[in-house]
Image 1 (cartoon, rainbow, N blue to C red):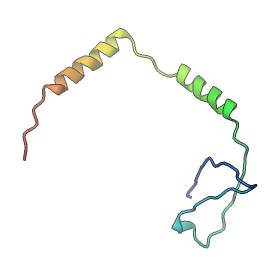
Image 2 (image 1 turned 45 degrees about the vertical axis):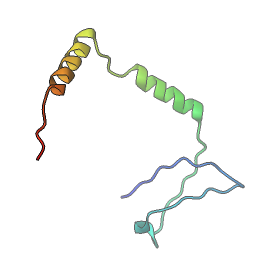
Image 3 (image 1 turned 90 degrees about the vertical axis):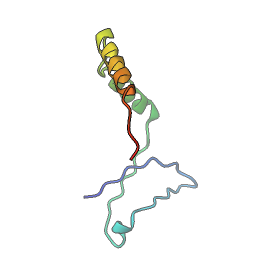
Image 4 (image 1 turned 90 degrees about the horizontal axis):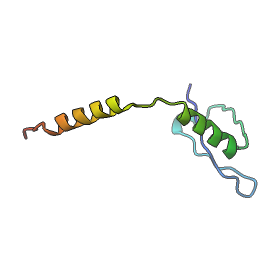
Amino acid sequence: MQVMREYKKVKNSKVLINLPKEMEGKKVEVIILPFDTIKEKLLLNKLLLNGPTFGAAEIKSMRDVRTWMNKWKVKQF
């Protein structure tokens, strides 16, 4: 099943949606929901605030790996 999600702005009480050619001639379900930007921002903030964090040791380890990888020399073919 192919699913699409797009955020569109209503203009003159209309919404234009471009569908892929694979959907040509098929029956589709269209659901229109108002987009609540405040709710979306709160959800994103909650996701970011509860996301993983790195301590000083992890950050140093990542920098050490980056420094080590930057020393690699790639030979041209």
